[in-house]
Length: 132
Image 1: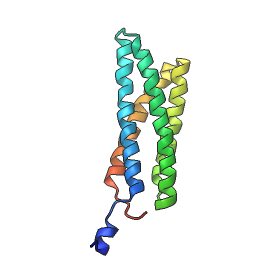
Image 2 (image 1 turned 180 degrees about the vertical axis):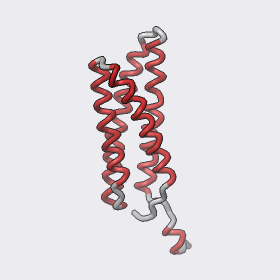
Image 3 (image 1 turned 45 degrees about the vertical axis):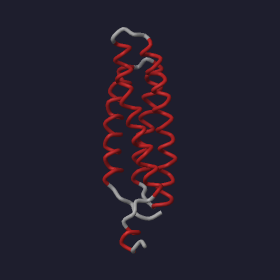
């Protein structure tokens, strides 16, 4: 039988969902510089892989935004939503900068979004929201 202490310390299913989607998002975004490197090494299939990776990464960002809204509503935690909204905005700008060939913006924004997502990944695994 679960005690009050056990229930209070159980991680919420919606928080596990956020952790999962942020983890998938990290995996997808880490592929992007790899695919860009394939292209830069002279293999033009790298462009197709990078474009597909951009679509997957951006889509995961929007799914993460939806999950972050659920976390905000269910757990009353606005932090993951605010961080995800900023991240998704940066990814969207980066996506269109890449399509436009604006590498002066696309590359540094890519580095910044990877760093921000890694920080967010660490944050969602360190925190333990306990009610749902």
